[in-house]
Image 1 (tube, rainbow, N blue to C red):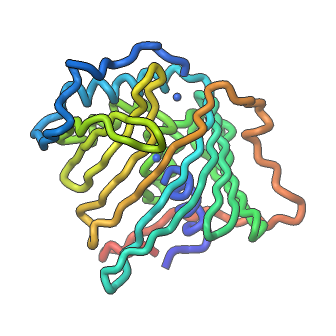
Image 2: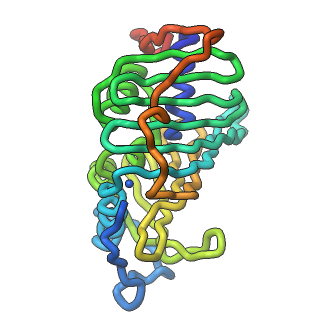
Amino acid sequence: MKSVASRLVVCCLTLLFCTSAHATGENISTDKDTPDSTNPKTISQIDPFVDALVKQVSDYLSTAKSFSVRSNATFEEVLPTGQKIQISRTADVLVRRPDRLQAEIESDQGITRFYYDGKIMSRFDLDKNVYASIDVPDNLEAALDDAMERFQIDAPLADLIAGNIHENFIAKTESGSYVGLHYLDGNKYHHLALSNKNVDFQVWITDDTAPLIRKIVITYRHLDGAPQFTAILSDWNFNPRTPDMVFEFFPPIDADKIEYLPVKTSQSGEEK
């Protein structure tokens, strides 16, 4: 069995990433150079147009000094009967490069807040009035990598929050095809289909001078029942207020502190 602290950190990072500005100003044409959306096909390598779209998103976000975004995410849990149950949660994330992050997550577990001040990651559970903190590296990408490795967790949207999106996406992709311009929330978006040996993932990217990811769907084919993770990203803001105090955690006087414990795995592979 996982310790209470271990479950808390797993819950926090999974809730948060469940997944940055100012722009190049260039837009990929969608006229005659756009692949035929009526005949999507699986290929053994990444379509150059797909690669270019992901690169444009990566270049746009990587120049952001700060940004905020909302994620409305849905996770599927597969019951022993094979039935899938959807669990939803919302995260409002604020990033200031290279070493600040703050988020508020609302889910079935209540409201939690997550802080990274360049040295320490802290999680505060408002409903239970408990918190925990760990020392991490002094840049966001390394801090997230460190937390995910130490606690053996998967954070589907971490690549969107920190690091080089193009590099991370391409490194994890064995094939990628362009599906077409598809409707979503009143607009049409570039729809990409990518895959590797374990997962299929779909990405919807805005078709304008601000190339941003609007939606992502990950299908875990290697897991029983092939559960999906879906995230809708909205309210992108590249000029948020980011004073230092926003990223610093000051625990309430009556809050209880708990210790983070790394997840240990037995020889049988069971976490405990």
